Image (tube, rainbow, N blue to C red; front, side, top):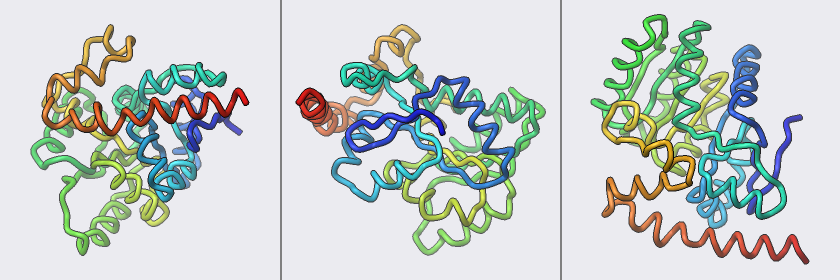
Length: 247
């Protein structure tokens, strides 16, 4: 059993990046379907209000903390996580490892020009990388069964899903067993970063926990509500859990 902690009703695996990669390698070797999720401030807040999302997160085979505030909160609560395992960094490491090991990759999500660009960039970067397929993230509800069937037929080892939360968690929770992908991971805005549409924060801001602020500066109108209204609930939840732990 992997070491897990609980934060605000959600489970989180206490693993380093390398331990996470070794775990995923085991998943792929097994051939059985496994779902991965990262939790950040936004997802922890959403999970408080959405029991279905919280259950999907806790049922995942692998749960990483993506966001320094989550790591800092774990320390404050007396159950420190080893490190942040950012989704964008895990994606990059897995693409490199897939090229080395011959794992088949499927990309799902974002606009067609973005997901196509990601495939093109990584084909050039890793000539040995095998793509099982790709598809954009825009579809009608009635198209979902055919999309799921298409992915299942592609026989990918890894599926990266770049659609919004909680839609991607719900999609994987509903169809992962049917698609039979050994490792399926929601990657949020990672395709935008990988395609060069969105620039990632400097390393010092990542380590300082200010990556969210850099993201806000890039798209202030879009990100204001998430970071300055919705995510502020995290502080209240953290204080409440801290008090409960002390009592």
